[in-house]
Image 1 (tube, rainbow, N blue to C red):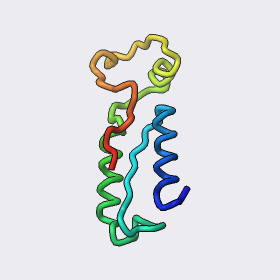
Image 2 (image 1 turned 180 degrees about the vertical axis):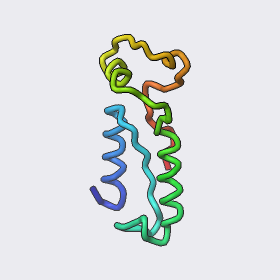
Image 3 (image 1 turned 45 degrees about the vertical axis):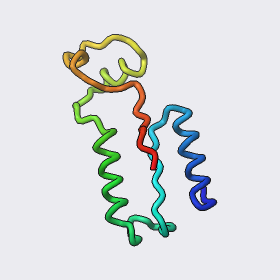
Image 4 (image 1 turned 90 degrees about the vertical axis):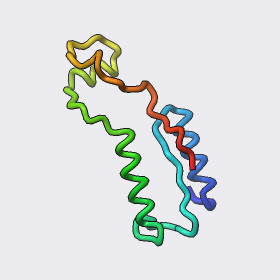
Length: 94
C-alpha cells in the first residue's frame, strides 16, 4: 500500500467506512519488518493492546454466532449480560 504511510492510512479509512475494525500506527523510521525493527517492543505492545480491546473472551457456540449474524433470537443465557458493541471501530488514531 506504501506511499510512506499514505496508502496504509487510506486503506484503514476504507476499512473503517465499511465498519471493519482497523487501527493505524506509523512507527518513525521503520520500514518493512517492523516486528524486528528498532520499534519492535512498541509494535508488540500495540498488537497486544489491539487483541485486548477486540477479542471477546466469552465462549460462543455456533448457534450464538448464527443468531448474531442472522438477527434471530437465541437461547443464550448470557445474551442479556454481554456488553458487546455493534461496531468495534477504534477511536485510537495515532
